[in-house]
Image (cartoon, rainbow, N blue to C red; front, side):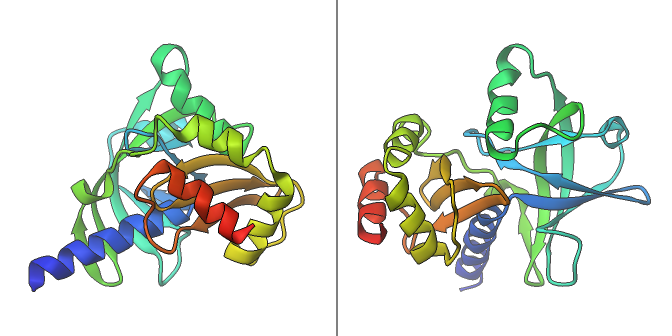
Length: 204
């Protein structure tokens, strides 16, 4: 039973992480707000200050530093937006626009605390099973803006004037709005890519 509970909490924590795109990093005595995305390899991507990239204990709070937040011990690995790292930087900018910091980093979650339970970080790195289908799904969903506007209202309860789908994974759809990212969470995980279209047809 204990193993089952641990797995259940790990899955709930992963869903929570995917439903958010902001956090606060604590390094030394400093707190720094960040925006993140997940690469299709399952690692978080953030922009970083140079001081954040020095070897040190680092804690990330999601969605922000608050009493009921998710707390994670993390390690940052710097990468360049040139060459192979460009796809990760492009993905971040597709979600959040121009980066506030000039350095880029991948975030490895070593361990986390969620609802007073501790989770091994390994369970919080999951590749996107829809990575190959994501570009075509985004294109198809963005081809019907009125349906997307209705879907945002019905699923998330948020009115979005000019929505743009920027990401799709088995747990939901990420929509960029002028004020940030709106998550259209699936009621049940999508088993296959076509379920995403069915979901939006039912809610749009």
